[in-house]
Image (cartoon, rainbow, N blue to C red; front, side):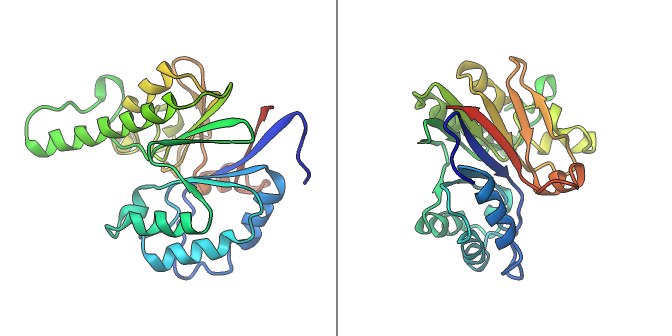
Length: 245
């Protein structure tokens, strides 16, 4: 599909969970996303165990994509303790991997960070008590600071944010309430209130809700591939999002 003179189209998806057996199974999907959009955004959990083998399979599948690709990592990409291998493999293939950084494509500023867990509002875990709890909360704060740092770098009139964990509880509806604290943190919403964006995308919550809003009214989209497949069975499992140029 040719570029539009009036809008920029983003194909957005997360939670692809590539395994060593995924070779050949995703090329048509990625080609379809590439054909529909000007940019492909990947919102974490790109691999299942974060291994070098999975990362190479992913890169081979992404060879079908003919538009710029921007990605962030998810918790599954950390499972083997070597997220840098996943990141470096993607970067070597030309993918822009954001971890507290920002980039500009087609005049749109994109800020990205993985995010972290911790809960929402009055239910947020506080840094009190055992050292392990304090380390957990410190990680959540660090990820929020990464997002804020990336957002602060944007100078474009149009801006979007990419996360893996959710910044709001609204897009988690459908998941068991007991696991909400492990699916995101309202600490991630705070930078989005200070640095407004046009849209936020995240994954991680496979049984959540497709769309909700921050308290300031910014649309937040849960683009976990299993959710897109289940909630929109008649459409390709990526979200097509447009912004005016």
